[in-house]
Image 1 (tube, rainbow, N blue to C red):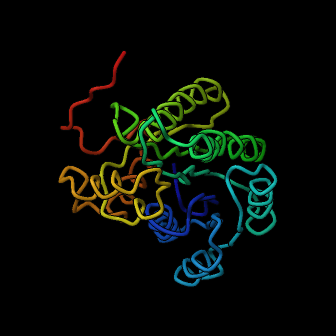
Image 2 (cartoon, rainbow, N blue to C red; image 1 turned 120 degrees about the vertical axis):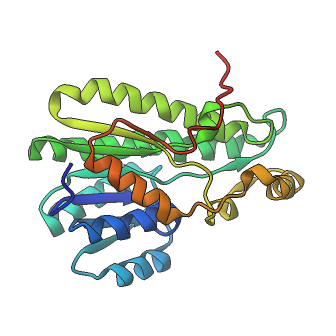
Length: 246
């Protein structure tokens, strides 16, 4: 897909992959709507990109009205919407045997309900444009069990099936769906985790396999290349074995 003159909505654009991807697509000639809950950080990203190419909408992906406002902003400011990036997500660190139900609900609403609400807001506008693309940022955690992040793993596994189902549903409407497994990254995502057990947080931080020299900017470059190639799946770290149970 050509990013020149495309209009892109990025959820979770206040940092990490979302910020890096927003910066990257504007360098390719796109205009972007930056969506997240942290207004100060969104304004920082907008300033770095330039207000002519970036619009800010503050909201929560679990709120349908907020996402409708974001799509409306894309239409009003830039004339439409071509690409939706479902990037917003939250990690939940805790064991399934005792994780508080409110954290389970929060993870589910952000990681599963949120992308569905975003798609429902965006697809009607994409249909008016004659097509588009939905980019879903998943996780390698969705492909293997976890003793400490079972909630996150299960929500991202559900997200994978949302992607696959949308791909079948929208195939004949020229709306493509790209699922991204960006690999382990050296960014601040873990700092915003919902934690049921601080000892588990400390354990994960001390575990070598969670460390990486790969940055959000590295992931953004890969995602942009996959968008341009009209790929259906991009998976970093393919050498890592999968242990997903049947």
